[in-house]
Image 1 (cartoon, rainbow, N blue to C red):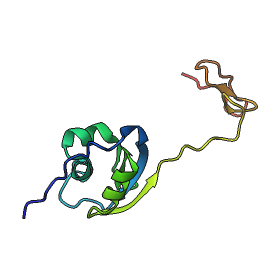
Image 2 (image 1 turned 60 degrees about the vertical axis):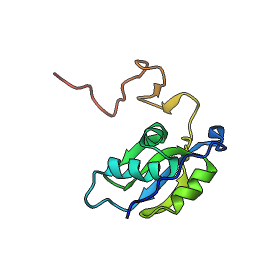
Image 3 (image 1 turned 45 degrees about the vertical axis):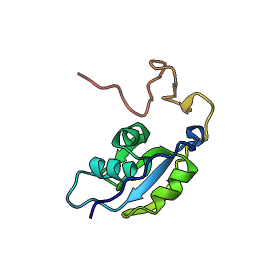
Image 4 (image 1 turned 30 degrees about the horizontal axis):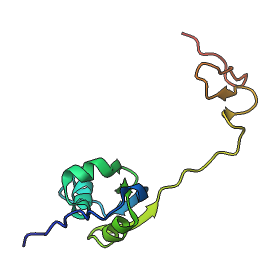
Length: 126
C-alpha cells in the first residue's frame, strides 16, 4: 500500500520554527539518517524540505534527530509511526563569568590562544 505524502502547507509560518529533538525507534533495515529524512519528509512534503530542516541526525547513544519545526509540524511528526517523543531543544548556560571557560589556574577565555598552563598538568615533552 502506497503511503501518501502530505503537501507542505503554504500557511505554515517558518518564522515560528524552532529546533526540536525528535526521538525515534532505531531503524532495523535502513541507515539512521535515511530513516530520519524519510520521517521528516512525511510531514514536510519533500526530501529537499527535510534536508533543509534537519540539523543533526543522532546515531549512537540515542536514535533520533534535531530539526527546525513549527508548532504545527511538531504536532504532525509526533503522530508518525516510530516517533517516540518530540521535545524543544534547550541551550544550558554554564555558571561562570561571561567569556570564561574555567576560572583559576589554567583558565581560558573565548579568545583562542589566550590560555595559561595549569600547574596541575605539566607541559608535554616531545
